[in-house]
Length: 66
View 1: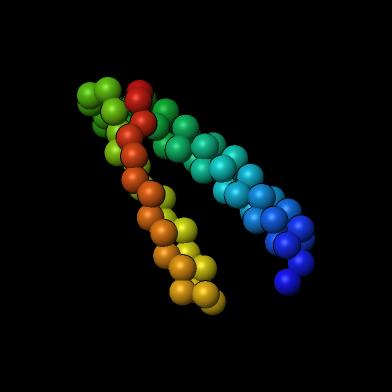
View 2: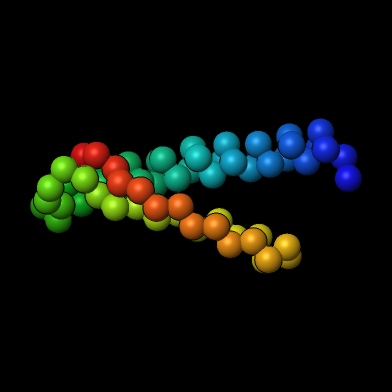
């Protein structure tokens, strides 16, 4: 296994995931705020990463301040 190529590939994938996720979350939150669907100061979030080939499923939960 080429460690350098793997590292580069993983980082490229995670950058794409991060940028796309941020855009989608911000769009959804703006729309929900405009429609009056949100209350409070935080919104729960959950992200699930899957790599079925190697049996990986990892879920990360948190809160966003709005």
